[in-house]
Image 1 (cartoon, one colour):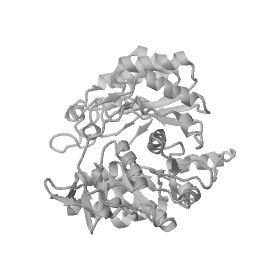
Image 2 (cartoon, one colour; image 1 turned 120 degrees about the vertical axis):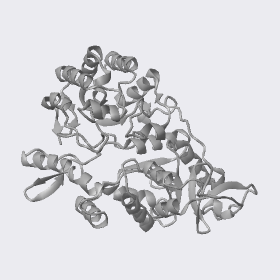
Image 3 (cartoon, one colour; image 1 turned 180 degrees about the vertical axis):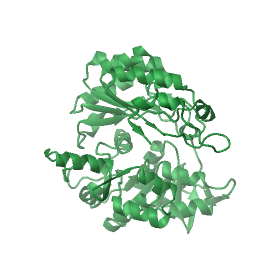
Image 4 (spheres, helix red, strand yellow; image 1 turned 90 degrees about the vertical axis):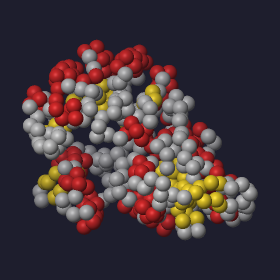
Length: 460
């Protein structure tokens, strides 16, 4: 990108907080017995009197073995040090529609690049929130952006925003009508169109949660890419925000919500052509998805409700995307689908396509071993699969039934046995005693899980 080239949108991927800072905030704010802090403790390991993440441990072992430093600024391994799929996808989506978009992959390690982009006075910055369950990581990025460019409009969307919105009480908002030049949000030469946009005032709970993030505009939609595109166009041209659905923004001291319009973006039409992102450093490992939502409706999971009906990318579109990956330095492929091997016939066809095209990718994915057979696993191995992470929540038939899992312990066992014969790395976590999911809040010993333990990579 040329130094004087204008930018319409900067998309920011992941903000991994400093471990000591993160731990201190959790303990001070929520306490040692909080769910958030207990979850963090499971992600740490103690060594030589120091607590570190598993990625830090990997770097420690790498250095201790006398290996050459990794070719990045710190020389160590980094969590999420591959292109953030949400940031890459949104950048690609905007570019395909004629906008000048760039992305920042890892906020903590790419601040200088972000400052350089902000110096070019972009139209807006879009922050994704896929991995956050609290506001602080977003607030930290917003504060940094304000410090270096107080005028740029900051947009936040994704699961964190959607979670805050779901906390609003039913019928807590009242419709209001507005005709205001302020709806153009900072376009000083624009005038109201004369049309009235019907908006709702957000509840106090939602307004407080979103205002705490500190952004200008929030996208509230489980997909959101079409809304973001309309928003960037409006900000660039001085258009009205009240004419764009799925937004929240502040006006006259109130947080206003525009009407909801559910998006249904085609996976085939929007499959990434990675060659359009060649001006970014992609590296040897990329992530992709072949589906949206999940085929199952487990009792403990709301993802299918949030993401809608399962949508599948066609084999033709996947082949085009894989071709674009193969045109670069990609050697490893991570498939993020919750249920990559469902439906099973389609999964086998994907494996056959990978074999036929001879891409040479090593690939990794989540895998439902209870929905597999010998042929599918043999095809996986031949097509380049090197590792899978299994979703096994319990070894107890009672708990599985309570969870509404479409699986049995016998099916798990058969699937794991087949995988171990063909796939290099099979990982899953199985508690020594199942979580309290049973009636009466009693721990149920994982009798069925005892058959699975010899194959488990991690037992908690």
